[in-house]
Length: 211
Length: 116
Image (cartoon, rainbow over all chains, first blue to last red; front, side, top):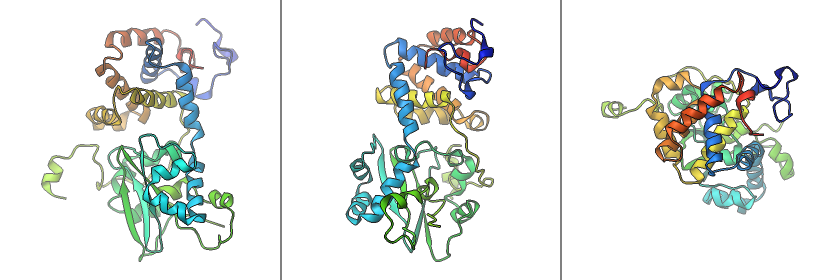
């Protein structure tokens, strides 16, 4: 060991992040090796990798919430969002990349929920990285078969006359739920509306709670 | 579901199967996991392979790996396999570099290289 680990500083002089202090695994070793080879072969740079991670860290469900709140207060925007989600998210400065965004609207008659049965496709450009449960065998298997039971495990009990529509994402097509604007939010400014739109509301395993 | 449907069905095609209750656990992603994600985005942006290529290897790795490896462990395995297939890195240089990385020290922090 060329440096003293006990001072908890990395060779660069920065403190170690907590997740860097665990025993090096085989797959971490592979990540380091591949990253270094790509940089040395001139395919990418450390700056580009760090920029990708910073972009990843900047994306969060607050982005999706802004889109939802705008749709709630601006009917023309909502119409464009439902017609072409990718184009509409760009209007608010969010980049869809290769992702075709399909926005599905909750109404008095229909509740939508999103899953990816085959892998873990998710509208990450509006919500950030998917939560662990979204990627589990349990969620992927059961949501298309017994959605009401799955939703009840999230604490969401739907009225029996509400139709449930389940949307199975693909690598190229990502779904976002446009929740129904709750009663009692009339006159709220857009920013306040966005605050009640959680990640789970936009996946469809929750509904906004104005309380 | 028909028998024909079941006969051609691969392990990753989970929709409609029975499974346990939803586990609500979540974790913040570690730096190394975010780096794997970044490498995928860069490699696909360069056109070396597609998300379909990522999935093909993940699915060919088999059902056991879904239980025994974490999400980003499976991803780096697939990203690496796809980069080798695309001729971007060679098995020999990968092996040599992994040996070198391992020798740097016992933790990810020791071995991670000049990433920060």
